[in-house]
Amino acid sequence: MASASVVTAGPTFQLPFPCGETWVGNSKSRAHTAGNEIDFNGSAGDGNGDLGRTVVAAAAGTVVMSEYRTTDGFGNVVKIRHSDGSVTLYAHLNARSVAKGATVAQGQKIGTVGKTSEKYTMLAHLHYEQRTSSGSIVPATFNGVRFRYPNQTLTSKNCGGGERPTPTPTPTPPPSNGGNPYSGTEVCGAGFKQIDSATLGSAGRVVLLYSASSGQNCVVTLRNGTSGKAAMRAYLEVEGQARKTAQGSFQYYAGPVRAKAARTCIKWGGAIGSAKYDSPREHCD
Image (cartoon, rainbow, N blue to C red; front, top):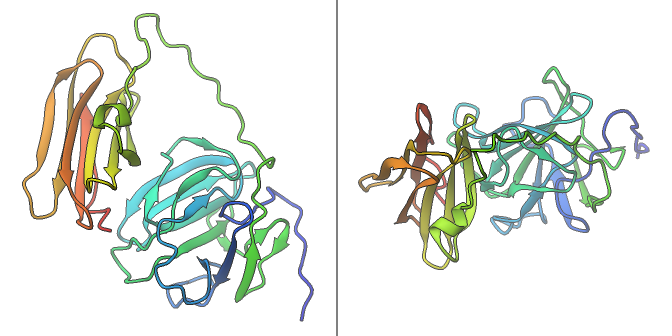
């Protein structure tokens, strides 16, 4: 057996799972085009047993993509750009925990394992890639050692204390523009947890929450600027049902809009002024 090659340039990537967890990586999927992509499962042949397990950042960086994609079959996908320009990609996520533009630390939760895709039918797993700054998919390294293709079982050393994101200065808002005192959880109520979000330019964001106990989704649009009022909208459309919308002139938020959608596809979104977000058909599990 060839000895493992040690890599020292660039960030020291760690396994994209919490410290101490053991995962099986495999690169043999017929959907892989470069041969360096890795599909991770918690154990061989575990079916959908990994659905909803935590996915973390392999290294610190900036989120350059957090969206649901249809054309390439990635479904819910997050991309993170790192200090040397390299990129890591995390696909088929059941839920995304970070938005585009966010800075993340190594080991920070960015989503959960899923099986989302408009192109492929699959069991739950994490599709993972390491890419160069130009987009080429390269052999992955974890803890400075190249992954032993085509498959290898690894235990995560993503235990904190690694590379941290470069701090981004927090802009000082104008005196008349205090912070919004509300969060999505406060507006939707106890038991709701955020599972997705989308930015509305500099105006604010729209968030999607879910309550496991009630099987309800909830959508709220939140302003960044809170002086005066603005035209705002929040909506939720459960597949097979009429769209529910809250809109008007509000100071802090539009919504909440709630509907039961357990194991049912939805569309959701919102707007503040001319800035708007409309999701694709998603969150079907």
